[in-house]
Every structure is written in structure tokens, then in C-alpha cells.
Image (cartoon, rainbow, N blue to C red; front, side, top):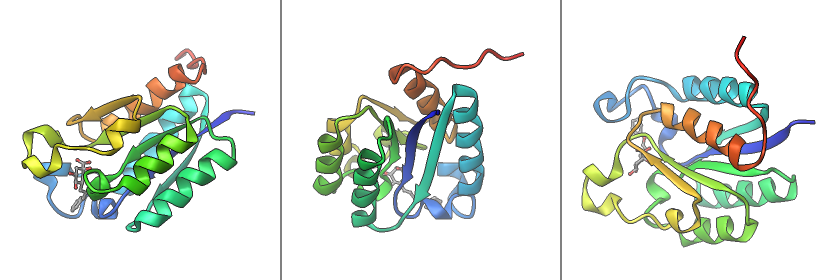
Length: 153
Ligand code: CA2
């Protein structure tokens, strides 16, 4: 049975592709999900893909990933990046590889976006590479958790 990773998305990311294309591009969240599923499939991983506008729901899903024996978490915490000690604590507690993804380069933007609490629990951080950052994170996660990527024919 394939190993499972969780790809979790925070508040307002359900708006992708509908507003602010200059910052976040034109892909919708459904497009991001398709990209993640295709990347996970060729990396030999199963994926649980979710989005919520609620902080506690993200905490619940991080704990769920642990109890269901997932092997890693890719997370775009969105607006909770710079505020949520609860999400940080949940990620620290589950002790599994975590890759933090931001579609935009948070370090080129307003200073209030720079200080991520989540990074303190992250194995690595990808920012500014658009939605392709999710695919890069999943491919690297496969390497971190010891799954061999299928050769392309
Ligand atoms: O660049 C990212 O991925 C962010 O995590 C996105 C967050 C922002 O608060 C972070 O600083 C950086 C915002 C997500 C909102 O997404 C929208 C997408 C389209 C239209 C409106 C909001």
C-alpha cells in the first residue's frame, strides 16, 4: 500500500484563480489539487488534499494525519503563517516531515508576511514559485520519506 501525505491549505486559498492573479496566478484550487494528485501518483504517494478557512480545522487535520499514519505534510498555512502558534504546536507534535509552501514570495512582500511561525516546524520552505511549488514539495517529500519516484516511460 502506498504511503500517504496530507496537502493542507489555509484561509482564502479557495479563492485562487478568481482574484489577485498578479500575485497568485490564474490556477484555481481545483487545478492545484489536480497537480498535487498527478505529482503524488508519479512519486508513488497517496494524497489527502484539503482546504479550510478555520484554524482549528487545520489543527484537527494535522492530528488526523498523525493518527492515520500519514508520512508527511505539505502545508500552505496562508494567513495563519504569521499568527498561529496552535498550528505550529500541532506540526511540532506530529514529528513528521513538513514542507511549507507559499505561492508568492512572502519575503518580497509586506514585512508582516515575513515571520512564519510555521517555518519553525518545517523541514523546508518553498516560496515564490507559484503553484508549481506544491509539485516540487511533493516530489521532495517522496525523497524525504524514502519513496522511489517511478521512471517516466
Ligand atoms: O503566497 C501564499 O501562498 C500565501 O500563503 C497566500 C496567503 C497570504 O496571506 C500569505 O502571506 C502568502 C493568502 C491566501 C489568499 O489567497 C487568495 C487567492 C486568490 C485571491 C484572494 C486570496
